[in-house]
Length: 210
Image 1 (cartoon, rainbow, N blue to C red):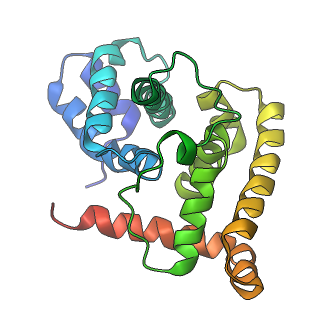
Image 2 (spheres, rainbow, N blue to C red):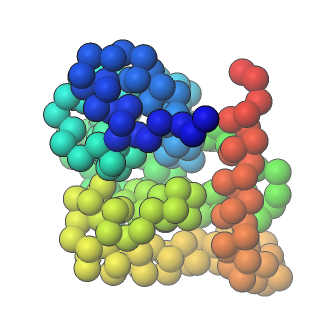
């Protein structure tokens, strides 16, 4: 039996079927967990819960059911902002300049098994937050620049420019972190494969019993 599409489940939930909402939470919890895992040092469960509580409160207002994942990422982004403001006790954060490594320097919940994976995860946390989010949504979640632009509140043209700059900043951080030219070339040259490897590892972690 084919799983019910998001749009159908959301309409059922909006129509008063709580089981449809529960199915959407089960379906999308892994992607929202991934969103937070390489960003914060705190346990991500509370942030994931905050995201879905906000969805519960606002699901009746969603008028594009087929865009539910994008709506969820937008909520998660706002939850991340609130976490950062609370953690460093600041009202405003410049996401185009501040990195998660600087704002929240503790270790994240991802335990990388390959040196290249560790380098890449560290480098992602050392670039500005909006750049990190953009690259992770692009590489790990397969979103295109138009969708990422909508999530981050940018124009499509600005997002294309941001993506190019994000890759440049990532390579620069990899250069600083790599212990040898060979390690740098391996990580940068095989970037797509290493990113896919991290994504696969997170999927494996998600399948393990808690």
